Image (cartoon, rainbow, N blue to C red; front, side):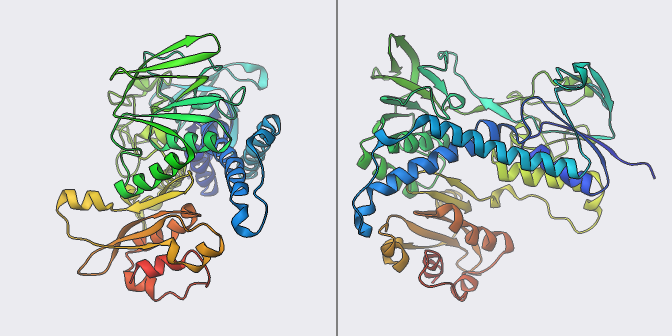
Length: 460
């Protein structure tokens, strides 16, 4: 039997996972990446931002050390931006090497360059930085498009990387912002607000809706807003930025309601656009929607059955964890594992987190979503202030909320606001995915003292 030949375009979480899994199942895999293996998640987005947030969190924690018997600690002026920059470089480099070594050990051929389809079963790679740089034609049995996305830049904004920044100019920025205006109050926007307010910058946030995190639980958003206001963050609610004026060493953001905010820097966090251009998808017969995403079915297949899409470019949840899962499922489908026991991805059960302070994480059915649809639910909530470990840590902020079916007791969703929320949500995510009942959580004998005890308490 002939070996299946797989082309993977894009080496981010989805692409590298697809390549690794397909190779482990016996496919001959070629991965084409134009920037860095690991993709934007490693180079620009997820990992660098969380590395900066870790530094910001350490600084924030040092200010609260008085409650633990220490003299309250570090000042923002003590942050060494060059050391922080080098730390980000080191972390991303180690992760990149880890992925590259894994792929090499599995026999995946990695080409540095840009791939463009020339037909349904062929592509050409150009812009290569190795092997003489000559274009190379490739043929394949199946292909996976995992080219990710890039920051959306509104027509009225012109990023310069100096004063007008996108998220990709901010790891860290060229200089510590004295006063930063963040445009966009979704997940990315509020993470940057947390990051720079912790590092000592004055921060203003343009909030186009009536509260931050418009797609999250309103109670969760209110808890975050309370913390932001406590820090001195200025919230401009119900305002949409419509222009940016650059003048000397500063900028002014003008909003549609007549308000204006002057600052030293402005950061655009207004979403992303898929990297589906320049791929020659039309030559392969692959359709894209009006936003540039590749519509897929539950197997991640495009309208061309042997060409798949995974990650941000697929238009599903823009999470690295989802991209990785898609990549793995795609590889298994290509290699025929779907003909056996196979579970499709349920995007409604994907856990997500917001790395602010306090952290926010959720999974499954949301309370507002249930009420909007008229679905009957049971909602139970426990504050961390009632948990011994939170008091020991001198950080009782936040709560655990569990959504369950009032008739069967099955856990439908939940959210956590507080210290280590991104870790604690995994327990609820497992319950949602496995169809466990609240009694399964309640009867689990958890460590004492631990923050996880709040999950069992919320299940009562």
